[in-house]
Length: 336
Image (cartoon, rainbow, N blue to C red):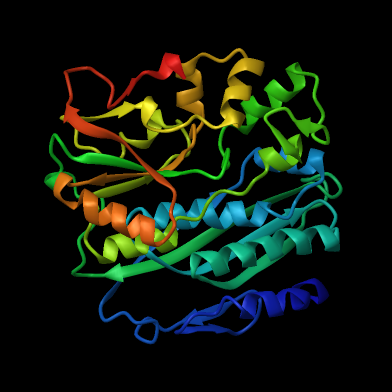
């Protein structure tokens, strides 16, 4: 209880209109007070995965909570939802109060950035299930959109010539960490060593840069009616971002010359002896969110991204998909 009370000021900073904290394990949401006339609820649930293992081995936990919120809110916002409130679950073998506070404070930071309320959560001790201070963390975000609002993705509106815009990632985000750990081990490196691709950070710090939260910019793009689809680049890497949002007859043709492959991915490719295909099927390769935009709306989208200082690149177009071909085509990958 004392641990949860220490988190109350952080949670109170995230409260948005219509939300009430009745305790740090529960709360209420009044949809009309939140600004909705005829709301349809939407929800997403996720964990951070094996990135937690790297955080534990590097003893760097401050950003884990931001990752959790980002994964959930990015997925919800990519479907057109406005994140309203977030619930977290932190489980450990034996409660380390300072560690738990560090993680949940990160969740509050992520909620504040995403514009959603940290409405509640639970800290649970699971002896004999988790060892000592080992922990796992998961979360659920609940959002809403108006019943008469267009749904994303707008697959019926997509056509050849539509433009693919990529929003740049902040780093690895939260996918591919089993392969990352294997690569670090095979390179005989320690997480406290200087990152070979970034002299300003330790390897652990560079690997654990938190997932970028795209919910605020997606909310603006959706409200303006400027995008046909959005997809976070998570499992399956940049290759896997498109099958869930494209109709069967279309494919995304991407030019890898359109954006710079960040050094962290170059290092993983060389140190892990990874072919370009494995990099692209595992990691975001510098693109954290992809947008499908009508060619006539590109100028307006780019202007909005510039106004909000959102780093981006125009990375491809939609083309007719040949029978039995993949839905993501990479041009120039071997030259990167």
